Image 1 (spheres, helix red, strand yellow):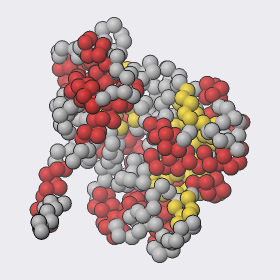
Image 2 (cartoon, rainbow, N blue to C red):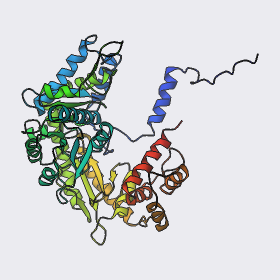
Image 3 (cartoon, rainbow, N blue to C red):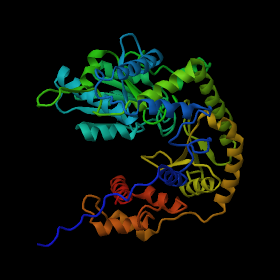
Image 4 (cartoon, helix red, strand yellow):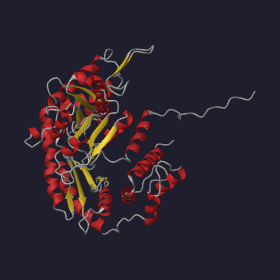
Length: 492
């Protein structure tokens, strides 16, 4: 009989630990730096020595603890209760309860699930709606897609970029399960008028969630440092839930977040329990089942290490960075800071000779700054809102503002000397005729190649041509291409 074919090995032969770690270090060297204050998106750097080492040690101590069952691992309940209690003391109201989650997206997902199930159980809503400003985080749209809610998007004020309370109130119906406000919105760093929005929601019997994932651990300490901060938390009448990320301005490692509810009865709608199978009785507070307690422990350790006075001092350093950056930006010819940034986030656009936002110049500037070792996050135009560059300020950036502005001046001169980025009219015409729902593989590959996103995982060194094309594409086509691109990156 012929012998059975020998299967190909799934893994190479085992390697010594030092070789494995060296390989990881080599991969990590290709990434943007997460410390040092020069990467103005995705990372939050306290600038404090020893915090990373503390977080790593705390994680290691609890890495093998399974957060699925607190009756077997009671330390899980103690750590989580401590973290939630701190969040309630900072952002809550008597009787508020909460849950530790893996990040802002999961916190938002759970808040939307809670609102959906509450609307169904209490008001009999079977086709729930989610009312949100156009600046609300994409995680709300993700949650609505996962959980079967209809999104009702309300345009924001074009000058302040804040949610419009009157328009929001007009959008609320008997089907509204949840109304959303941001403190602040990610795109522009402005705080929505939470009190007016929450009152409108309460007047129609709907719940109101405040997305304070970014600002929740910063704004209260800015207030304690003497800065004016509008009311935005669970103390505001009508606010029924709030999300706050500890891996942002709490300076814990990712992912660590808390979702808070006005009371335990509301939080109960978040939970999932199932006893209708022959295995162990299942009850999950979050979307996860099995989860390492390491992330919980490191967030607890960092929070206890920095402490009340430490967070106030870090908030002052972040505010000081903004105090130096904003006048410097506003002094640059053509720069317009968007809105009134209040929580560490700054977005600015650039005007061309005609006074209108100059996308080409803006994208060239982002590339030139990256050449100089700075990452500023490009944000494309949307619904009449201008394209811009986004900066997330942290305490680590406080001493770098002058260097940033100096390089920005040089980068802007270099950007103005470059040929404007122009999308080939033939490409624009070709793209305008495409139906994203019926695109075949060949058409997708062709458009990705036009956009500079084809050929595997490598992207062009300069992103201006890629982003200029994406900016002009219709949203559904843009989303389809981004999906296909990510699918190409994560392909074995």
